[in-house]
Image (cartoon, one colour):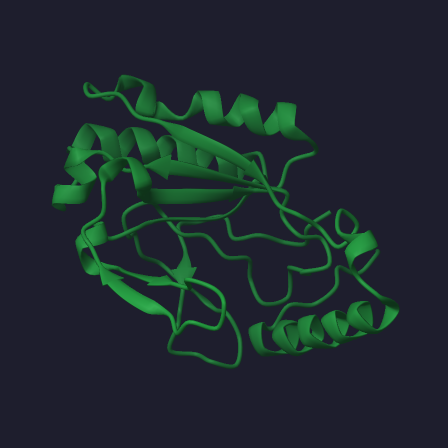
Length: 195
């Protein structure tokens, strides 16, 4: 299970390249990162809940205050249940670039947004829950149900090393473990300790 988590609205302080720290902000959807002494990547979150874009999010229009209040209440419920690992909103696709790899050794091509609204994600939550059914229960509680224009959420499960075990040689697993340790050290992740 995950270690200690933040209990207030927090967002990554990207100016600190040695570890993740928490500082109070609200950006689109409230971001959440565990405190430095809490989280281990070995226990990877299992699900991501995408919020699909709509015409409003793609135009840069911010949601009304009532929607923000409802989303904040939902966020607090996720935190209280200790299932929210991280979540955030995204800028409109007009501020994005796609890097397209055509294959067969052809150099990548860049394509600037905006992109069709049905191809864009407006935000996401990473949930640490026991299974798909629990993730689905949380997804159905999302307050976007009250959105006048409707909204689409997409629930996806993370692939773990265990899922891909047949695709990795022992040497590949060892290299992967070394890379993860380097990343864990950089981000300040630590393994949970048993009391």
